[in-house]
Image: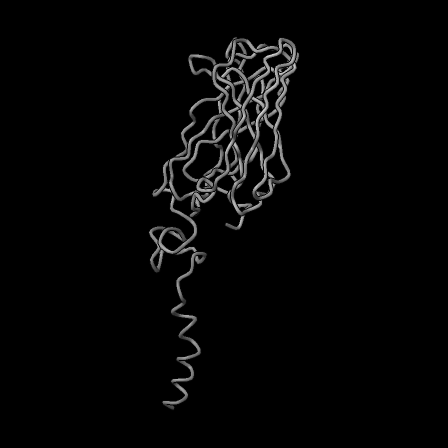
Length: 243
């Protein structure tokens, strides 16, 4: 009987006393919340700081088409989001909602980044303002800011401020040992008071290690004021790389 009891106990013990996991819908083990914190990849929402929307703007492209841009800061040092759903809301001069743009973006750790939506057509309405917000709860996970430590930078920024078609040139330099997969490059132009006056985005398929990649941004119409500062952001999805 004793031997049989031991066998039965050995069989049912794992079912009664299950090992804590990060997907069992319980707060157990070293977790600080339900399936988050401790050794889990997921970070509890209470342990994070919400992204800060520094500004959201609309920028003319041509006719009644506008690019929508939000400039956001994630102040969480080792925490990122793979899929963050967002929404732009566009208002006319009477503060009436005339349109929405929704999309999904990643949130890199400990970094300022831009969210870009191209060519919103306002029709017969004149845009007055644009708001931006994340519209779903954010699923934060541990992610070291590795990309920020790599020697990838922008150089040789030059603006040909042609009256008809202003053009911005720059080189993206990768002095690291890694090849960077597809990424976006976003240019934001500021006037002498620090106000963003226009923006543009281009997509690149990759950037090989120890290589230089030229980028060109062209606007079909003249700027509303003379750009004083040219900021070029390299937007690399931290979840698309293995380093």
